[in-house]
Image 1 (cartoon, rainbow, N blue to C red):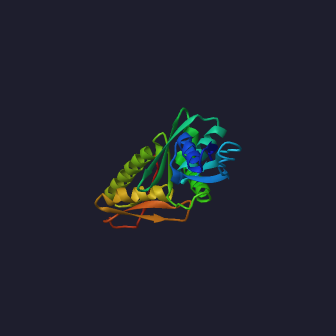
Image 2 (cartoon, rainbow, N blue to C red; image 1 turned 30 degrees about the vertical axis):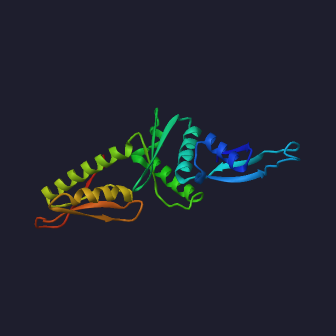
Image 3 (spheres, rainbow, N blue to C red; image 1 turned 45 degrees about the horizontal axis):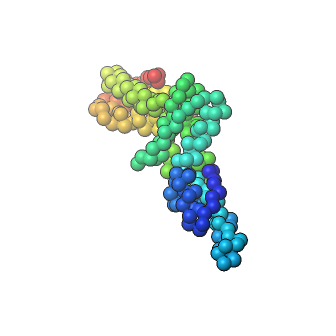
Length: 220
């Protein structure tokens, strides 16, 4: 946490000077008065300024940014982290050079990092707004890939009249597939199995006569 000691003719003056230097508002800090001002004898001798310590409170968004930057520093990855407050949570967009290591296979490392950030942030903040991390726009590309996969699997299910099972996904990814299937006619979707092997199955509304079969579609 950022902290700064400052002096002034009054406590208020010292705090105002510290706030200006830190670039924050009064509501964002804690103030500790280290020394009260003293007027001195006849206003001439022994006069002393007020001295305060102003500490910026650790916010959930600020902690998340520092967490990501520290992880990247330990991996020797220069990154830039942009924080934005949105309705569904605190978004951190991470950019940099050659930072695919933070994504991992099918976003596994990114999902693990996001989980750790949320758990750690819960210890320093009473706020429970979810923290959502993206690296070089990976999540948006992943959404598009999953929606495309859902369309292809749904078309196959309708054409063959058989159930199509996708590979295991996270709960968030399964939700994307379910929503994409809802927008299509002639099919529905359901989740089957236990974590971490739970998968989406595309179910045709009409099936040809004969035993039921299930095909498996590979993720992109």
